[in-house]
Image 1 (cartoon, rainbow, N blue to C red):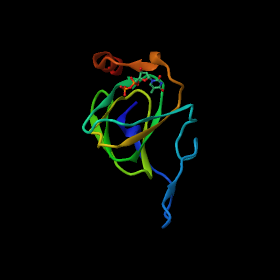
Image 2: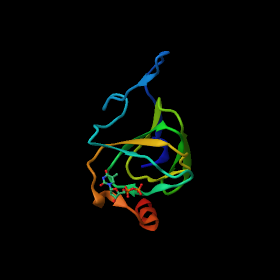
Image 3: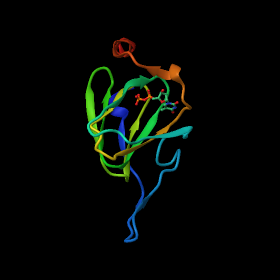
Length: 134
Ligand code: TYD
């Protein structure tokens, strides 16, 4: 998949003096059915995670709290998406190398996934990833 297919998706936002509210519906705000949700928390400030690609899994990533960068690479070029608000997220199609970097202290990353956890769906070797793109 190419970087052109990546997109920032703005979510509905109800602003209220009692506190704001946003939400996500599968196949409506995001283009896949949610099979799994996980979150990354208690990350030491400045730390990185997730240098890998998925063969099939698609994701939608939201910074529910704090800030971090999602670095995506389609084998030809690289782009950095800074996430720091809970009313938008990043749609990551399958087949991209992705890492999450520069976590701020106390950040909380929500990841919605299109498949159940499957270790065989991961590509951990960047050179192997590059070869698949040739
Ligand atoms: P991993 O995806 O390797 O995290 P990162 O790439 O950010 O370092 O996952 C870390 C561990 O958590 C790994 O042992 C597998 C486990 N895990 C699950 O069991 N289910 C899941 O949905 C995820 C995302 C990870």
